[in-house]
Length: 257
Image (cartoon, rainbow, N blue to C red):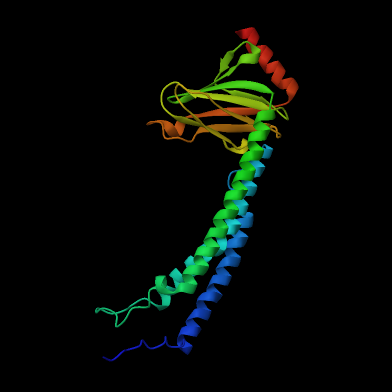
């Protein structure tokens, strides 16, 4: 009985080493470009922040984008190089296929370790940010506003000022606000982009969200949950005004009520 042994894997050929260097170079270039994009673009696409909550969200977007950039760049580099240099041309099948990467223990081990570390980092970051947000919301004891969504409009009620309702939202600047959000029909999502406030409006339930606007201006409330044929038109205005203007607006509406 004869025993056969497998031949050891062949050493990388000069052509293979050259291809690897080209992929690595492309990866480095794409990583630099994506890092610059991550630092200066995603956080600024949603407009100027009008609260610390929105600043925290933008910071998280930047951190997540920067962290993901090298991974995205590696995938792009391999994909682009494959399309440009490893693409088979001709009418017949290719003579041979490359070795499956899943059998390369080193590559699999490195990819698994790096992916695990990235996931752990993002998990810890998310937990810290959520804990800070929940602590801030628990400490908030400012103006309470009841928000009701219905197809396809928002109404706002001010319990501390007699409970009158309005289809326009007024908020005092630099004062904490707590929203109590619900729905009369289907699931909606109360979203004020520049304030960093986004929470579901569920029928029969009340959810809460707190924020402190710190910038005067007019913003928009949008619905971020597909809620029917006129979902895209479910908007309202948000006016962040001075404390004196807010009190005057409340007094005017109470008098009219």
